[in-house]
Length: 260
Image 1 (tube, helix red, strand yellow):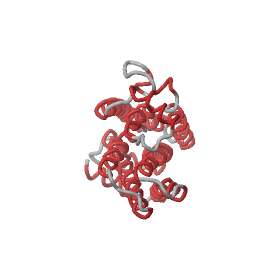
Image 2 (image 1 turned 90 degrees about the horizontal axis):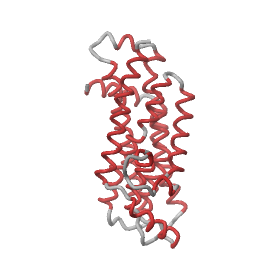
Image 3 (image 1 turned 60 degrees about the horizontal axis):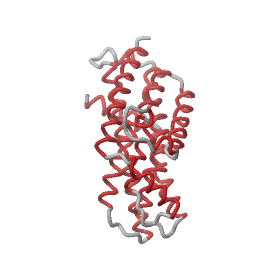
Image 4 (image 1 turned 90 degrees about the vertical axis):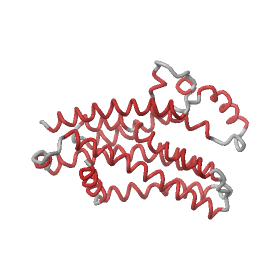
C-alpha cells in the first residue's frame, strides 16, 4: 500500500496542476499582509485557515481528485494496473490518502508563510503553538469536508466540467451557510445543520477567534453564537464519520466504474 501511495504521489508531483495549485497557498497571507500593515498573528492565521482553506483548498482538492481518479481512464492504463496485485479499492484509497497529504502540506506551508510575514511585519508570535495545532486540525477537517464533493466527482466519472462546477458550487454554498443564523445557531443533534461539513467546522473554529480586536457588532454576534460552539472531539467525530461513509461509497463507485 505504501508503494502505491508513493506512486500516486510521484504521478501527482509531475503534473503542472499540482505546482500551480500549491503556489496559491501564498495568495491570501501575502494579500492580507499588504492590506493590513498592523495585522497580528491571530488574524493572519485566520486568513490562512478560512480564506486559504475554505475558499481555495476545498475546490483545489476536488479538482486534483478529478485529475487523480480520471487519469487511468484517460490514459487507458487501468486494465494494466489490474494485472498486478492491486485492487481498485486500494487504488482509490491511495488517491484519497494523497489528497490528505496535499491538504496537510498546503495548510502547513500557509502557516509557515503566515509566520514569516508576521516576523517581517514585527507582529508578536505569542500563541504560535495553538495556531499550529488549529491549522493542523483544520487541514484534516477540510479534507473530510471535501469528501461529499469527491463522491460526486467519482460518481460523474470522467466529467471534468461537472467536477469543477460542483467544487465551486459546494464551496460557495457551504461558505454562505456558515453566516446563516438558521444553520449555525442550532444545537447539535439529529438535524441537518449538524451534518453540514463547512458550517460545523466554522462552529468549531470560531471559538478560537480573538475577542479583543472585535467591533461591537461582531462581539455581539460572537456572544450569541458562543452557546453553539462545537468541541474538537465532537467536530472530529462528526466529520470523520461522514468522511468514512463517503470513502466507502467512493470505493464502491470507483470499482463499478472500473468494471465498465
